[in-house]
Image (cartoon, rainbow, N blue to C red; front, side):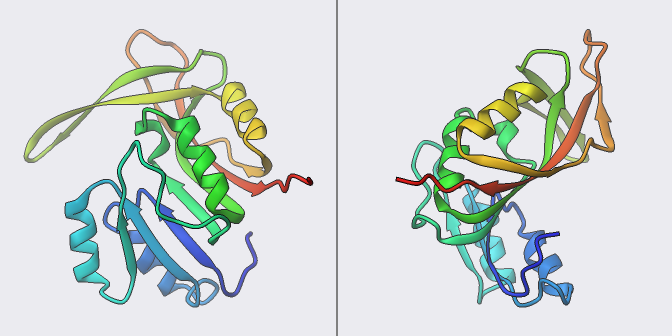
Length: 185
């Protein structure tokens, strides 16, 4: 869908850098230069050990990412924007550093319900975690993306549904492929 045989990609909120290995495994993206960035210093340290020839950066939530304007052909934010307090500021920074395309995946949306913060409960073998998470109204998010200078190239309508207690409308995780709009000036 992106159609680039070579590209620089920033994985914003890379976590364990799984996309580094996935991109390398496919012939259509094997020559892409991957850069990972996350606020979790432990995961960045682990990722550096797993992929020592790859650039990884530790981010701070309230500080601009250490990247140049238009540094990346593609910026990926998968399952991360909903956990950032200043998501509009983060999207603005991602617009600044993206040369062309931005892929947002696994973003939780409602079509009719207003945007709000919900508490996400995660259970695993080590116990439970609780995370505040934004669930976005789809029209509000689309409007914000347009105001920030992105054009929508593609959006899926999700296949992962989650219910919030007391709300009848399901949360649907969507993916967006956006193109950076150049402002003539």
